[in-house]
Amino acid sequence: MMADSVQNPFATAEGARRYQAGRPFHHPRAIERIFSIVGGQTVRRALDLACGTGLSTLALFERAELAVGVDSVESMVRLAQPSSTGLFAVSEAERLPFSSGIFDLITVSSGVHWFDQSVFFDEAARVLVRHGWVALDDHFFEGSVDQPDIDTWLSDHYAVRYTPPVRAARADREMVLADGFMEIDAFEYDDPISFSQDELVAYLLSHSNTITSATQGRETTLETESWLREETGDWFGPPDHRTFLFRGAVRCLRRTT
Image (cartoon, rainbow, N blue to C red; front, side, top):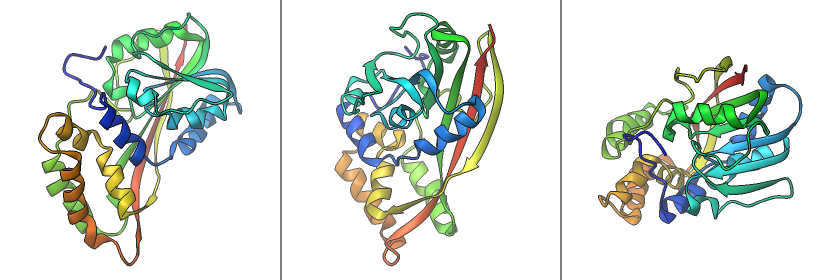
């Protein structure tokens, strides 16, 4: 369950499909930075909340003896691929189907802003071992690395046509922690990614902004895709790929009691 004013826009089969098709696999870079704070090469048991279609959990499979990916949207979880060291389940982050004190690490990648955070932190404290970790990471699309006109388009056209839905605090913002947690480190980093036009359009179609437009009946996926292709066509060819800047944010918290 989320706060009353926050609604998850990805809770449809079409939203899940668009998410899977468009999101880049940046997650190993975030996991590497998280483990630089958590310490060690692996953990025994890890829980990845708001796992979506499993990209963030896939990165965690390499660093945990057992990794469990959890998302509240069944259509998302159906698209995830289990492995020999991990599995997936459908559950709300605020009401987890696990015994107390069994996970060493909880990760949340670009998802904590959809949670009822006060309830989530209480539940995280319950399922973590003593001195276990919560690692929040986010990945923000900042725009072009070398073309100011693209940044202007994003702020003056894209963000106006597709306004962001209401969200709670993200990983780059201060948040109210439950008793028993201490923030150990928080930092940001640049993460440039190269896209073709097809990849960029697919990525923008995976945004909560554009998915909300479809779920509220304002546009079909086809109409949104057509507009995005027309608007971004001049940015490519040649070159057929362009580098875009993303900003990563990591916040690591430790259970103290």
